[in-house]
Length: 232
Figure 1 (cartoon, rainbow, N blue to C red):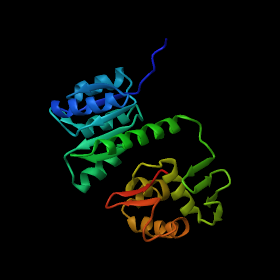
Figure 2 (cartoon, one colour; figure 1 turned 45 degrees about the vertical axis):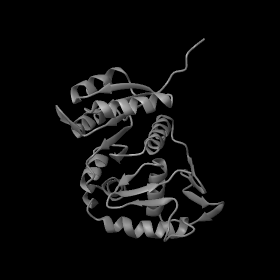
Figure 3 (cartoon, rainbow, N blue to C red; figure 1 turned 30 degrees about the vertical axis):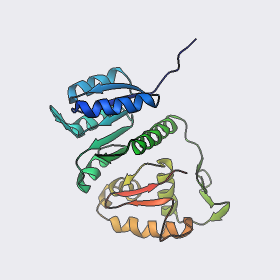
């Protein structure tokens, strides 16, 4: 009988108690776990055990976790979820801009972490497949080939910028995209400080997509960081 292949999660944290807590919870939910307590150990394991995702603490004894993240991004797009006691908005933005797929502040709930891992793995697998011309998230259907969008079956008219913004968020559904990432993609690197561009277009997009734009269900704001299109 062939044993089931399990996704490997690499835990990078210098606190033994945290590693034990995460190992217990993750193995209970069917994951295989590898552990590292330093940047050097983590980099070696990341290149040899082919993890499906990395859970990364930032404060490591031989370097900053962000340095490791940047090195990983030099050769891999494997999901990296930062787990850190640093709760400043600037730290979250910097980590996400550096290539983190998500960021959770300690302490966190295990159910939330598991949900974030599932989102990151789904996104990674979708990225590994050829582009699907149709993106469907909840009631929102985006035909990328025809540049058409329907909400609950009703076609809506979007401007070119609104369409590109919605499609970009849909391609990364469940993941927060920072202001810098969105502005660079939509208007180029010289526009990274013009967050008012995003606010204007997001407000217009919500009026067309959301049932109640003042209380958006799908196009959510990560205060001071960016936006996320929630998964169904």
